[in-house]
Length: 285
Image: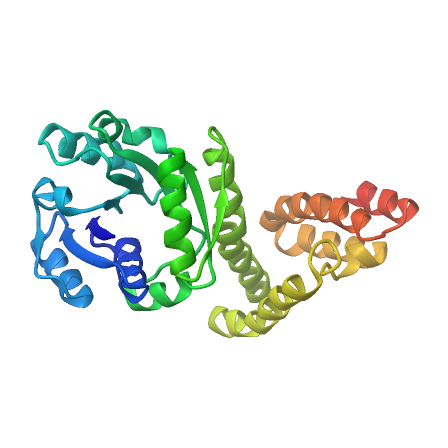
């Protein structure tokens, strides 16, 4: 299968390298910047690169639009207007939030459309390509395109999840909670440590082993049994002390602690916390 990548950023670069390592031929790289297109073309071993995607797109059995979410529809429409798509191609985008329907100009040209989103953070092409092995990808779109996507994911050493139409926004919100909000929570933890006298750089280094241990618990024990701490133990005294200290010293963190504590209480009940202790902690929060 011949592949054309439109967009030479981190996600497009990682996918291009992962597909090449899986035995796929990358026949062209298109980007707004000729220099970016050239660099990725050299990485994947193709001589065909351009800032005009419609010139390269016809050569691909699979065309991947790895451009920012906000321009996926317009890039697709522009390629279609210039006659780039052809019947029988699979045209995919990598957006986590957008459905495959935004590729309707390609579908009108006879292509099968696909949303293919890797559940992974991709900082740069080489590291990203390694991370894609073993990662999950969500697939949504035409049945013919989903079948191709499943084969691609398996060939890259990943795992495929198929999403029903209309669920992409909720799915993307889930990933934001898991990844983006984790970073925000660590920032809050480092902020609390700073209030306790620990410098931010040292605070981050201090909590990283704790985070890694928690992730290992999640991998080995799953949910809800990887939950630890005062709430799942029913330790109302510690929760009361936390609330008092936050209220007196760093009130800007109080609402966040209360909100997260109430949700943690639900997880703790599933992990076996008794109702009496849960009611006491709930009243405190």
